[in-house]
Picture 1 (tube, chains in turn yellow, orange):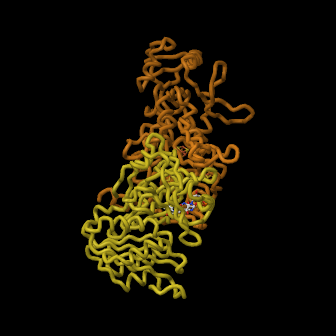
Picture 2 (spheres, protein in one colour):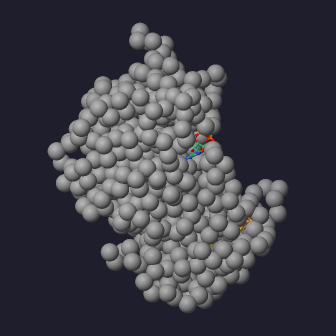
Picture 3 (cartoon, chains in turn cyan, green):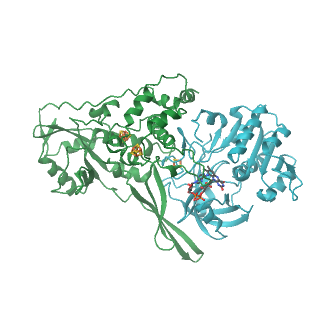
Length: 285
Length: 355
Ligand SMILES: Cc1cc2nc3c(=O)[nH]c(=O)nc-3n(C[C@H](O)[C@H](O)[C@H](O)COP(=O)(O)OP(=O)(O)OC[C@H]3O[C@@H](n4cnc5c(N)ncnc54)[C@H](O)[C@@H]3O)c2cc1C
Ligand code: SF4
Ligand code: SF4
Ligand code: FES
C-alpha cells in the first residue's frame, strides 16, 4: 500500500488536531451532508497532500472525534471534503455545523489505494451509499490523470433517487465520454428514469472484463458481500479487488489498539485492503 | 560487585530526590489488606520489598488518565476561532526513579518501547511516552522467591532478565548486591552509598515454565474454534481488571472533558479490550459481541499479533492477571491448552511473512 507523507499531522504531537473552518456545507441526502474544510493555518493548507482512500478525523469538541474518508481529489487544493452520514453523537454534532464554523481535523491518515500500480489497467469502481465518499476522491483522481488508465467504469448505487449524493458530479461524469458512469437505484421510482437494480446485478449486466483490470468496492456490508460474488463470477481474482474496512477508531496512528482485525490495524495498515489480504485475516468483521 | 546495606537504600532514594527526581516505590496502601501500589516515596515512608505490587509500574510511562491538549474558543477580529494548546507530558516529565520493580515489570517497559518508541517514519512514536521513558530510571529488585502465579521463566531469562532495568539489586545478607545495566545504573552503583563486595549473587527464583513455542501460529489456527474460546472464558465477567493490572496492556480511550460551556480538554485514559462497548459501532454491529471473542483478541494480541508486528511477546508472566481475577481465570491454562494443539504448517500468518 502506498504510504503518503502525513503532512497534515503534526508529527511531534500526532494526537493533537489542527483548527479548521467549514467553508461550505452541501445537503446531499436527508441523512448525508458534505463539508468542505480548510485548515486555519495557511502553511498547513498549502502543504496538505494526500492520496485517495486516506482518511481524516474530525473533532467536534465536547462530542468527540470520528473517522471519515476524504471525498475530494488530491488536485483540489482549495478545501478538504468529507461526506458525513448522521448516525450518533459526533456525526449529529457535525450535522449542526454551518459555513464559517470552526472544527479541528487530523488528516491525512491511513493508507491509500495503490493507484500508481494501476497504470494502463481498466478500473472498475462500485460504491454503495456513503461508501461512494472515498470513491468520489478516487474517480476524480483517475479522471485528473485519465491518460494513465484503461477503461474506467464507475457504478454508484443507492436505495432511492433521494439517497444519491453528488448530483453535480454525477451529471458531469454521465456527460463524459471517457468514463462509463452508471448510477442505479434499488427499485423503480417515479422520480427516476435511470438504471434500476442492485449493484451486483448491474455489474453482471455490464460484464466488465477481468483481464488487466482492478475493481474497487466500498459500501455497506451486504452490498460488499454480493458485489464480491459478482466480481468472482466475472473472473476477478482476490488480488484484483480492493475495498476499505471500517472499525471504531480512536488514535488513528496504530497505538490505542482499538481498530485491529487480527494483526492488522485499520488505521495504519488500512483502511484500504485487497480481498486477498482480507482473506488471510482472522474472520472477525 | 557493589553492595548497598539495607539502611543505605533510603539514603540512596533520598539523595535521588534531593537531586530533583521523583521517587516511586511499592508501598502498602493504608486501610487495605494487601494492596501494594507503586506510590510516590519520600524520606521515612515504609517500602514493601516482599509482596508484589498489585498494579504494575506502567502508570509512570502511561498514566491512567492524562491530558493531550486544551481547546478554547476565542473571539478574534476574524470571528470565533479555536485555540489548541498541546499539553506536554505533564506527569513524570523530569527524572523519575522507580524503585522495587521486578524483572517482569522492567522487561514490560522494553516490550512497550517496541511500539511506543518505534522508528519515526515507520509509525508514530508517542511524544508523552518518549519523554517519560527517557527520564525513567528503573531500580529492579531481583526475585529470589516467587509465588504460585509467577511464570516469567517461560519468557527468556525470567527472573534473571536484565532488559529494561538500569540497576538491579540482588538481596544478600544485610543488604543488596548492585549491578548496573545502563550508564545511569552504573553511575548510581558508583555512588559512595555503595561499597565493593566479593559476595556471590544469590540464586534467583525459578517459576513455572510454560511451553509457548509455536503459539503465535497456533492461536491463529484456533481462531475459529469458538468452543475453545467459550470454554476458556466460561467464568470471565468481562470486568477488565486483567487489562488494568497488566504491565504490557496499553489500549487507551480518547475523550473530551468539558470545562464550562464549550472549552475543555481532550484526554486519554486506559481502556480495556474486554469491554463490550470497546468495538461497538453506532449501527449496533459489534465485531466482538461475546466475551469469548474479546478474550480471543486479548490473547491474540499478546501472543500472536504483537509478536508479529513488534517482535515482542506482550506478556512477561508477571502473574497479576491471575492473582487479581475475581473469577479465577488463569491465562496459563489457556496458553497450555492452546499450545497443546498440533501445529499446522503454512498457516495464514506464515504465508504472509513468506510472500
Ligand atoms: C476508515 C473509515 C472511514 C469512514 N468513512 C466515513 C465517511 O466517509 N462518511 C461517514 O459518514 N462515515 C464514515 N465512517 C463511519 C464513521 O466513522 C462513523 O459513522 C462515526 O464514527 C459514528 O460516530 P458517532 O459519534 O456519530 O456515533 P456514536 O455511536 O455516538 O459513536 C461513538 C463512537 O463509536 C465509533 N463508531 C461508531 N460507529 C462506527 C463505525 N461504523 N465506524 C467507525 N467508528 C464507529 C466512533 O469512534 C465514535 O466516536 C468511516 C469509518 C471508518 C473506520
Ligand atoms: S480479570 Fe478475570 S473476569 Fe475480569 S476480564 Fe480479566 S479474565 Fe475476565
Ligand atoms: S497478561 Fe497477565 S501475566 Fe502477562 S504480563 Fe499481563 S498481567 Fe502479567
Ligand atoms: S485507531 Fe488506535 S490503533 Fe487504530
